[in-house]
Image (cartoon, rainbow, N blue to C red; front, top):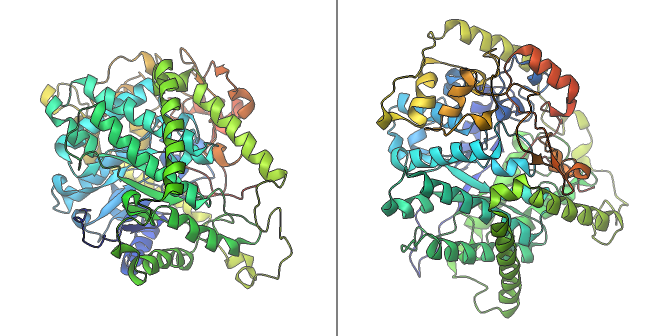
Length: 590
């Protein structure tokens, strides 16, 4: 979205709703209805098997297909998902991490089938695999290889899909995993620095294109109900990002140094008790990222009032969309310059967050950067401690949760008079239909061919993911799940990956560990459950400064290995009945 010049009214942000469930066809119908209501962008929610690289018929996908998002297993699903939606005129956010390169390949192929030029595609893949070790746990590869995948994808998109944001550095999940504003700012920026350093050191992008790389790094943040502090947090992000990109990377163009971010306001703070109170919580949290023009979000998606109870209905999502539209089009907010310029209170609070984040960034730098801070257990331990403090304050009544630990007397809620219709329900037959469909797709697809002998100039996402995408290979085959080949070596020992799809290609030829295979080294904490950040801190007891010696990776080699992994670590299965927001689970604050 172009930025207005000084003195012009600001333009409305991209308005999205986080949506997807049951099947590609059902989700496509929902997207087209939302666009007809004035939504200006799409935000795709994938189900947990898709997020962790499993096909619908995988043993480990059982019970989760289509529950908290849309299942996308192959090119046919992606075609159906965006049927009759012109992708060259759309701004699409895909909340996908470990399999991000594969989903982007499918998206690009569908767009090209529509006649679109890849250079015109606009949107975002979350692709922040690093934070998966700190919060949700939907990782597939160890941190080092994950960073290489991100690096290759950034290098590819800068050349081939220049309007695409290849990574959404995601502090959203960090807050829901316990992060304070200082930790949220510091850990997100440390991740961005790790990515930019890796891209620079890879040699895939010439030095003179550093500004273009920096200009495509976007962020996805959280905004809680303490909206004054949250607004100051965003101003701190803006100040520090400008400083880092100018001083560390020598980016001269201020347009490339802009802190570009989208937001999903806080979902963990939504309560099951008196859920009608969630409406005002959502509005206040939206103000945190829209009031200050100098730190205003460029894309906003709001949860629905009933998401602590389950999936929202289309009407509930419409209500949240109308909140954005009333603020942007009825109020006079966008007519003014920054409302807080010159405020000593805001300046002081912002500076305190900046100072704290600088100190934390220096500490992470001393540890060797974000990857080292993840592998050592430092970041996870700090988040668990902060989350424990937050929960103690809520349980002691020091932090008030209206309707939960104070003001609990209430009248009956007419919106919940019929609980069976108060939320969207997923037909149990959806899973079997998806299983049948993916098996039918495998039978009818083109025979698989390897990608050996691809010229060096064509390596990267296009060779590693686009060719199998075009011939119809399923996502699980690329992630190593249904390929049934036994792993021979740990993924972290597979050597340097030449392209964003090459790590997955190694999995298909035996270079990816099956579930239960031990990795060399350790990753701290137990982010085994995608909803671990919902309130338990992802196995906090194990995370307190002690690295874990074995990590069970999501994709599997053989079915027998997958079954053993499921029996040994049942919490490693995709689970949790609630929807998992652009990363985090939705649920009550207590």
